[in-house]
Image (cartoon, rainbow, N blue to C red; front, side, top):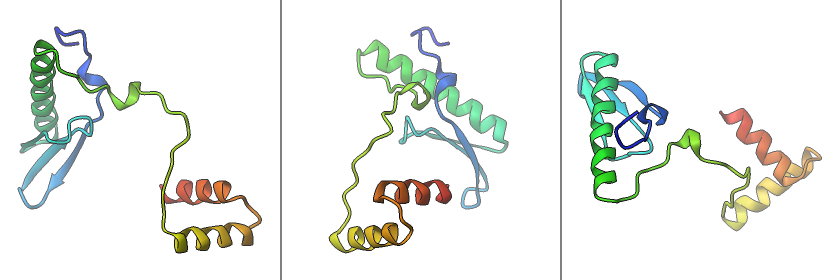
Length: 114
């Protein structure tokens, strides 16, 4: 927990190998402009967490909005998606062929895609 009262361990972190850099890179979707490169996964994560702690502190001190961790956000289970007319028609036809509503069909497709 930082001195701002915000627990930076609640943010979403990912550490992957960067072949281009020859090092591990740590990223955080709540802070998309930040990353940290290091020789080990642990050092990349530690470096990014330290950087995020500094950024959160600076944002808090300047009374700017501090991003809420994705894990703390609430989700309604609904979102709007605009697609072209042709894709909409094709998906509706595929749903009908499987005797599903378009919503059920899309949920199934999205679930199987992950």
